[in-house]
Image (tube, rainbow, N blue to C red):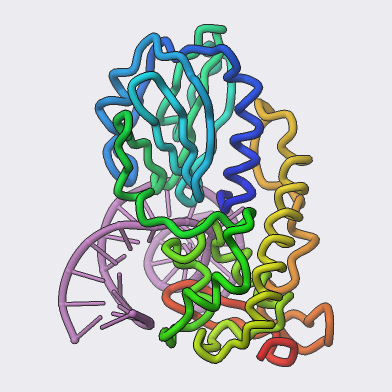
Length: 269
DNA sequence: ATCGGGACCTGCTTGC
DNA sequence: TGCAAGCAGGTCCCGA
């Protein structure tokens, strides 16, 4: 699931359930995620949840003694359920709340992570992150400045979290299509006007997905799954060999750094 | 500095 | 029908 819109949808879905709640205890069934679940998290008890924010694809739970970081990896999800709900195969962690419900972390592939950041400290994984895409910090000027002196392909540049966070494989491909930029184009060969267009479509694509995701997952405790939501709007992702919606040319599929990339060879230069 | 590859995992689809 | 290969929305770390 999780690219930035999915993570933000998760955050917004959780928020109303957390108001005034306290984590009474944490049940860990399987601590081996990408990194072992932090001992500080396992030891939590009677900890009021002060706030839930997001940085990139990390969900940040503010607690009295520090911050709990949750990353959903490739296949993770968080849901709010009654504590009595039977745990399934990949339900690795429950945060028990004082209202009789729990936040349940499910992650079949276990690429997710649950980490701890002590009060006042800056977690190394968050410290060097790039700008948030849905803020004014992401602009054509910023991208052009970051690209200066570099020759790397624009798609891997967009997916680099040191440049901009939250743009994953789907939305990188979709944004490049809408901006008419070839995914392999070197970043030092992109004019400022195109950077400006790219910054704009990144925001557009993420906001569209956010709106769609918000609708689908409004009832947060409902079974998750991944229904049609943003799928109808996809122009290139997962469409290798199919006709470009704009010009009819066959969408090309290539491998770029272990990941698949789809683009229209006629619309993107 | 940049790229590719491997690593971490399970589950689903595809093709023989 | 069975089985293996290949692929999947992330991202860190290593070596060249």
